[in-house]
Length: 231
Image (cartoon, rainbow, N blue to C red; front, side):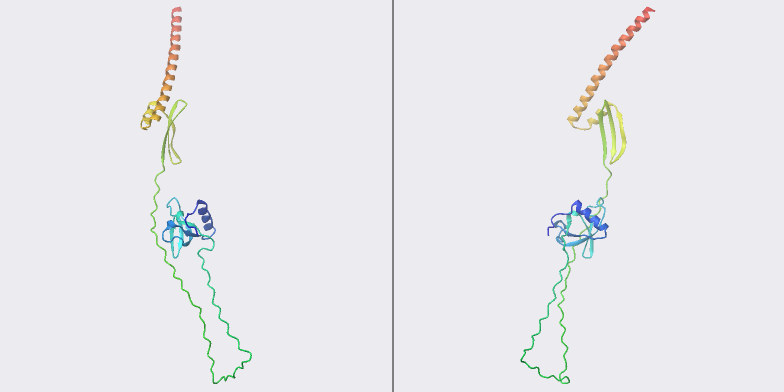
């Protein structure tokens, strides 16, 4: 019996289906279960695995104790069943010889002695009490993880926040200066260099647009001055 491996996810699911059908699957304790390794028990319940790692409740002897899947393995067929011992057959009585003549027996003088009853020897099996394991206290669940995302796309910086699967803040636009302050908190040179390159490219583009607008404004002012002189 190989009791070195624990229960796989598929085997735990099979045990869950067997319990739902009213059966109590047999399992064998692995080496990680301690001094009861190699013994056979019955699964009677599966509790919540998110509350405790030991969610497989096994009946062993008179106790029902929780174990983790690593402490158990699927028992092979026939494990834990007692084999019936063959009953001793009575020895045949010797047959009387053909030439021997039985002497007459007087019923009044010779009382009949009842044959002694042959009792079968009783074999008492003493079950070893299972070792009690200390039940681990269930670990309380902590709060879900919080994720804050700073992103850049299409010339805009956005910040979003999410806790677990719940969105706390949808992406909203922030100023480049604020984005630079947030990135400064991350002491990673590669990230800061990437942000500085993005800001430098935006600054150069903004300067080109400003220069273009100034040139267009100068042309409009010159045209306006000509119109004033003409009037």
